[in-house]
Image 1 (tube, rainbow, N blue to C red):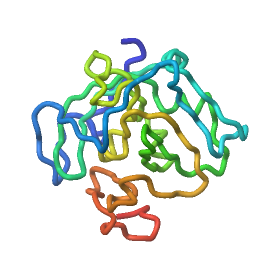
Image 2 (cartoon, one colour):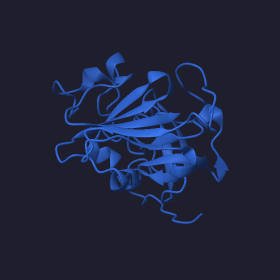
Image 3 (cartoon, rainbow, N blue to C red):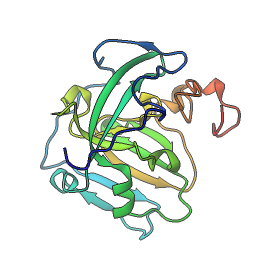
Image 4 (cartoon, rainbow, N blue to C red):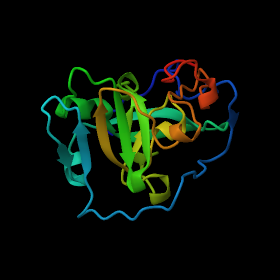
Length: 211
């Protein structure tokens, strides 16, 4: 596919290097909270809002979104509870394309990724702008299935899976951090795989910037 990019071998989340505390599982297990939403293209959009540089809100239809630059990232998928599935080929819109199209205000430090049914995951801006972070529409050359996040899934390979919501619907720019869905329920506020940042009790300070 055009615009291919692959994570280098030493990138956290890249294939072939099982992180500490993880165990290899076959296939691609389905894991999510709540029901699988139905895709209605006439109602669907992706919103970028919050502390944008312009102060406004930007929305893309699915057709408009797929006209943005595309890239491919090959990376493993890690669950905070231990399973790792390997060699996923993700294809979609790099997160940096969103930032280029809708720049954040200078004081933005974090983003909140919003998905269907109000699910959310907070990320540091530095995690969102990683070269390997993308909003995937395809997996291993095929359109994502509904169970795996169709039409849009956030992929952040160096963070645990709960930081990459399926059924993505919005990106909120934030000037201060606040916890997302699983972060409010005991999971680590940052979630770096190689640092084994799994649960909130491992956080070294109040805002979870270390662990």
